[in-house]
Length: 187
Image 1 (cartoon, rainbow, N blue to C red):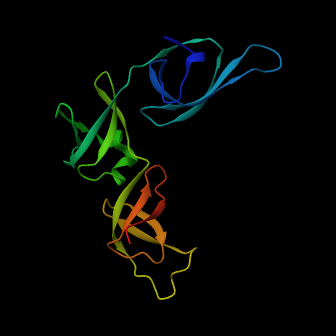
Image 2 (cartoon, rainbow, N blue to C red):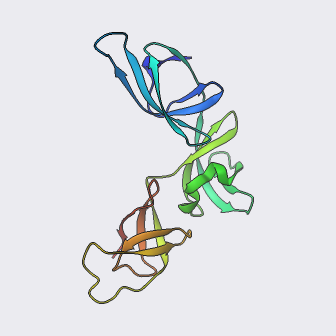
């Protein structure tokens, strides 16, 4: 048990039998009345985000979430296989647990896997990854100016918008939270 005064970003709460991750919180003292804690919570399993207000110093149940650094090995058709680099134990995660992260996973890439009582909840990827463009339409002479974009498919199968001057085979940095092009890697 913890008090709402002890909330921290990333903390996982057990509210009514469901796990909720604290995304944001703020202590608020209205002109009249008691202090309250406003929060934005994300359901760990469904991804649903809600706003919840607690009275100050209310007791909430916290959930123990074990976050382990694991290496992605391969996709076997049934799920995504990860290996704990410390114990070499392998864990197969379902597509529901991996979610949109599958668009950014490359073999041998490291990711943080969150577990609650041995059950995988979600994965955290680095903020950005480097991917190779496997196909994009060739740029035309004069397409060196800024502003224009075109679709490009990267090695994971994800299609992103890139500047007109990029060509097939180039490595780009992609934001794993939004899928946005961040820049070109190398020359």
